[in-house]
Image 1 (tube, one colour):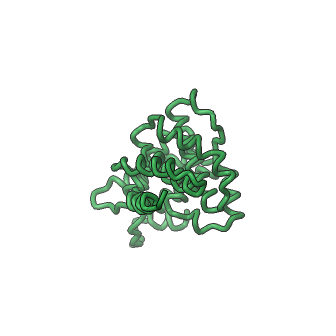
Image 2 (cartoon, rainbow, N blue to C red; image 1 turned 180 degrees about the horizontal axis):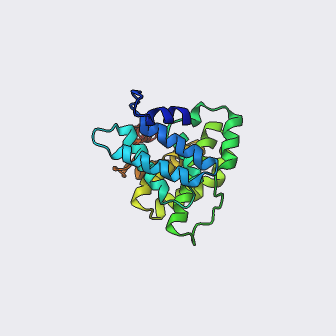
Image 3 (tube, rainbow, N blue to C red; image 1 turned 90 degrees about the horizontal axis):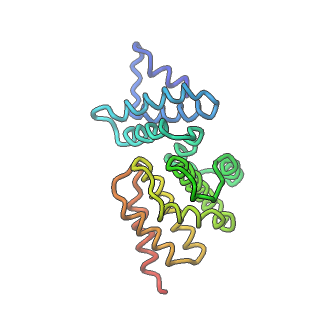
Length: 220
């Protein structure tokens, strides 16, 4: 990644890279994981500028906005997992890799009442990522240890406007897992709430509608 990024910085190199913002976001994620926080923050700012550029692709715009949210977050280490999630990588990984990812995502608390707004954002992010991973692993028992907390926070607590996408995705995975757990009523409630949010990055309105229509068509 660093090599390709360096090529894009050379003024004498005519490398055409339509999704440069995506490259920069991935490199920022790597730098955060390596403990290079300041370098990661620099790359997030660059990613955001690329996303704001006139004529930029929607992909770069969305990753640019994600990078900007990272700069206001308490846990920038988690940015890497959100980038992987946005790139739809979890469904492509074998169970052993998913287990390793699951073990590295935090925080793990289910106590929410005394958390600040930023702490709630980190909690929703962590629980949403874990729920997605456990869904793909088919590990319903462990998923249902966290889904009630994720459901409660996404339904009842207010998050900053820039974190709406985390709530929507959290509700989607809660809906999927409640359904697997044979709680159709709660699954539909989560999916309807997720569908009601319109403006956010990494939209999944079509996915939500497809699942919701399928559940609503099922006999009671």
